[in-house]
Amino acid sequence: MLWTIAIVLAILWLLGFVSSYTMGGLIHILLVIAVIVVVINLIQGRRAA
Image (cartoon, rainbow, N blue to C red; front, side, top):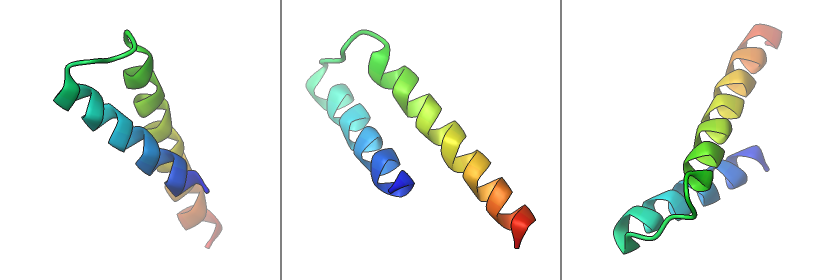
């Protein structure tokens, strides 16, 4: 589910660049948060394994 959210945010972020329409800095903040969560999840997953 985490990957799905990250992919959807990345697609919306790219769509914002293509259409020159962004909702302020909100989508960029969400993208950064999604990337941070994915990295933390990867680090914790490797540590637990």
